[in-house]
Image (cartoon, rainbow, N blue to C red; front, side):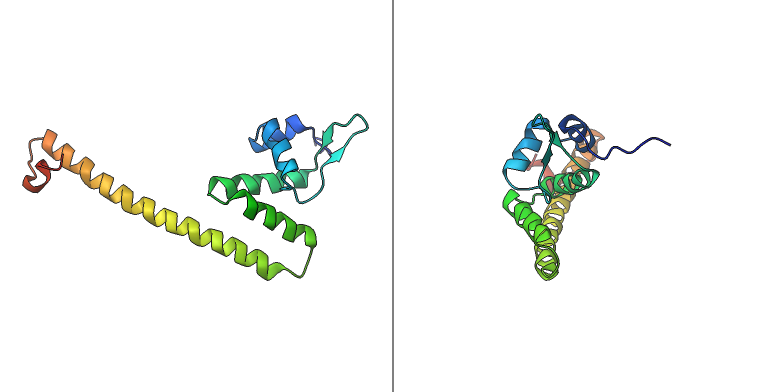
Length: 136
């Protein structure tokens, strides 16, 4: 059974999260970590497995459009400990609602694009759509 590392280098964390070393330093400067980043005697950063798990969540939140200040606030709430779960939930629900609205908009766009693709496929196969010809 392989030994689990208790501390990871910045390069190892970058590899595990898909974030660049530069992005990890930026996240630290911006206060986006839940726990303070530890340092070795030489100043090199040391990360815990929990940091990797948190960063993976941050990557998903960013990829889904959550602004950095909202992620920072979420991290602050977690750092503050128990007692603010309602605020955490509200923050995540608000983001969830925005993501669902974006998905709805994308689905409507996809429907329209699919319709136009079908029109051109029909035109190229010899079927004419009289009302669609002028909108090509």
